[in-house]
Image 1 (tube, rainbow, N blue to C red):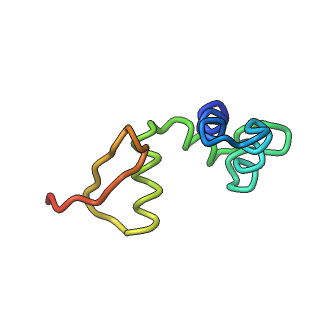
Image 2: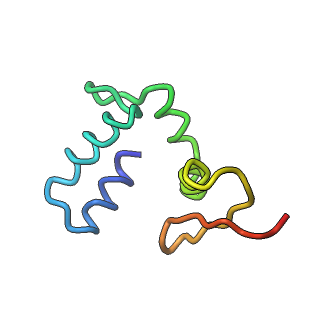
Length: 81
């Protein structure tokens, strides 16, 4: 999880992306200050990129059917039932 987040931050031009990624994961409750994943972090780490994107979108828009765009790493709500 930290590796992917570090890569994403680096691609956005963030300086010191590794320490920023660790700080974000700690703030979100996914990692301890010692660098170990919390139970929540282990759960999220076991999810695919699509699963995490859909999980984020459900928190914003609520339950429903979602698609996933791997190019943008974003989920979107669909009208399919």
